[in-house]
Image 1 (cartoon, helix red, strand yellow):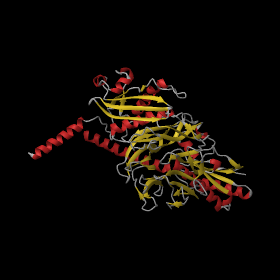
Image 2 (cartoon, chains in turn red, blue):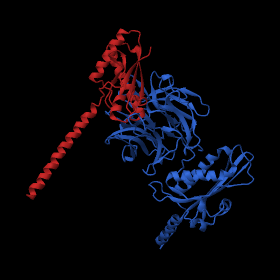
Image 3 (tube, each protein chain N blue to C red):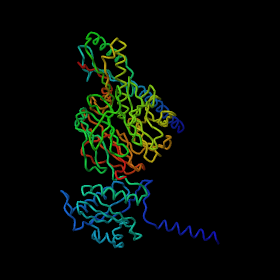
Image 4 (tube, chains in turn cyan, red):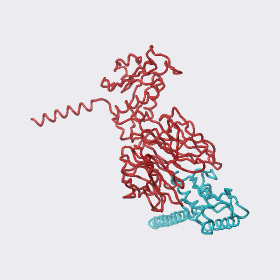
Amino acid sequence: MMFNKSLKNILLVIFATFILSACSTAKKSGDVSDVYTGKETVKYLASGVPDRVFFATNKSSLTTAARETLRKQATYLRKNKNLNVTVEGHADERGTREYNLALGERRANAARDYLMTYGISGTRISVISYGKEKPVNPAGTPLAWSQNRRSVTVKVN
Amino acid sequence: MKKFFLIFVLNIFFINKSFALIEIDITRGNLDPLPIAVSPLHVDIKSENFDDLKIKDLGENISKIIENNFRGTGLFNPLKKEAFVQKPDIAHLKPRFEDWRLIKAQALVTGKLLIIDGKLKVEFRLWDLAAAKEMTALAFTTTPSNWRRVAHIISDKIYERLTGEEGYFDTRIIYVAESGPKNERIKKLAIMDQDGASTKYLTLGNELVLTPRFNPNNQMVTYMSYFRNMPRVYLLDIETGTQEVVGNFPGMTFAPRFSPDGKKIVMSFAKDGNSDIYTMDLDSRVVERITDHSSIDTSPSFSPDGKFIAFNSDRSGLQQIYVMRSDGSGVKRITFGNGIYGTPVWSPRGDLIAFTKMRKGRFYIGVMRTDGSGERLLTENYYQEAPSWSPNGRVLVFYRETKSGLKGEGFSAKLWSIDITGYNERRLQTETDASDPSWSSLLSK
């Protein structure tokens, strides 16, 4: 009886360990895809053409949603041949300042490169990185950080 | 017999040493700070007036600055003046040692000053109260408006005599003064004495400015500015106020620092999404590319002998610290611990690299040997980064930000310092919020 009880306890501990490790792997994969998917903070270059795309922590790769947004921007830019834009790259506040400047620049260029593959001349698209200096949402929350990891296409004329 | 004699002699030598004048070991956290009495400097009645200086209070004010410096080190315990047993002028001639010992002081600082012919003449003495001896004495002459620096120089001399290490009080810190809400921050370059006094603003706040750093003789500053929305590295002459863009790069330049001889600036240049490290020679204007890699290479920092550059790169996936020869050859990764590493800064002594570490949503300031071994994390917080060394390589200054609420409220950025022992964490007083500190070298050197 005694033995059974302690065995049961051990099994419980083992079981709990499984659950915990399952949780931690789930969290890890969650970190990779912490991209903002909502509409809050988003502005529009024209009706149906969102001005910004969002990135995962420390990443500059474009998500499926980001590519869709950029294709809409490319279509819009093709229709408005005299329009030039600046792509502003931003990072969240959870990194060192200097690295974030570089990361913002990489994100802005990822967006610019994608626009160029859809036929928009590189001369029409300038980039600037603000690193973590210009958060759109000043809250200290994961949601705010995800809204701040962005590139924003801004009309310059 | 001869051997015995030798041992005997050695013993005398060592005994002498252990009885010899007080010493402070600053290589470990000091939990038992040295009680020190800093007597107000005696003001000679022959002193003339000078501008708006309150001559009468000058001796007292200088002693207060010295006390404040000492308290800030965590190594000294400046005693309350109410307990002092002797008048400043008499103590300065020769203290009654037994009386000072009675108030538990182990060291005593005395001095006097005189303003005559538009000059401030100061002398001070440091006394070992247990040994009843003068340890050091110094006299100097300067312009009276320099009286704060006088206090810092005296502090340095005493610190040097008691710890065997160079002081760091006659120094300044350049930083970014911040104001306004978090998403509309106004940033200005500011410079202040190490103790927070004499703050001056060097820019008006019309454009974003970041990461100022002194050159070795503290006359020039390199920093990053968004002037005309072109983020570039600038060079600023503090005396004249003249500034210029460093190099002619077709894109963002950032993360600048001087080489230890002051002749070059090392920085990052971002092009088409890729940041690499470059140097520019300030005389010849020759630009050299130091790294050539598709990853982000930034936050470069020279070793004090100029032979190596530490930097951070995400070539392995996430930010890690690397060291290479200053021509870019021999790149070697030195951090392999759990977490992300950034902002390596080489100690002025050459033995350590300070860094920022990020792990599980927390930020650490730490030090390690230049090969990456012996990592020691000194402080953990919600957000902190960008360490800068005191000129003697014993203290780090860095900035820390607080977590903000849902509307950005409660956000602040402040300067902090910590000894490399991990002890003595302190907030530096600044007039405004502050970030990106850079510590000067000793001004009087």
